[in-house]
Amino acid sequence: MKRIWNDFKAFALKGNVLDMAVGVIVGGAFGKIVSSVVNDLVMPLFGYLVSGMDFASLKLVLSPAQLNEAGELLKPEAAILYGSFIQNVVDFFLISLCIFLFTRLLGKLSRKKQEEEPPAPAAPPSPTTEELLTEIRDLLKAQSGEAGGE
Image (cartoon, rainbow, N blue to C red; front, top):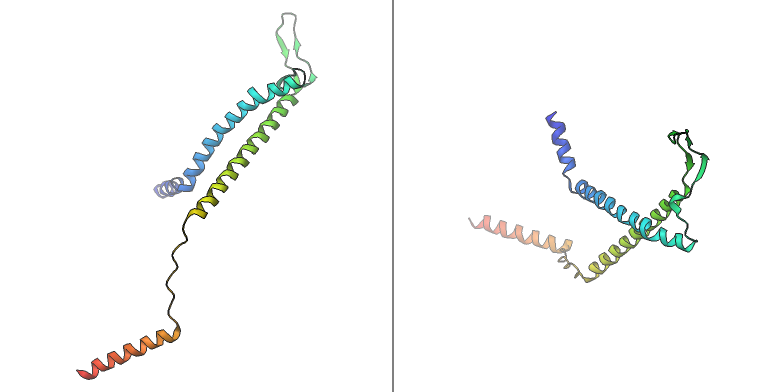
């Protein structure tokens, strides 16, 4: 059980998982903002342009609600809420557009940053085979000269 817990902690505390969690939370909040823009700004303007139509109330009633004599609900209305669907489609397109523009902006900033960074210093050239063999020969001569001098 302890090993499972340690494995889970190692997984959950990785940087990528934490980044993803932050992204999901920020994305949810961003979705609420865009939904508010659609519901509170865009759709009322669009409704005004089409003669004051409220898209949220557009529906196709399959069977109306049934009430008794006292006005109590016996059977709820069955309806297809296509106005709500239209709002969700507009919501989706606005969120997609915002994400596209945001990723495009990040891409431009990333390219600009790469252009501003100085190139990495070049590595010194590696010695050729002949230079290495010459070094080895000189070292062997030096070692044999030291051994012979003792």
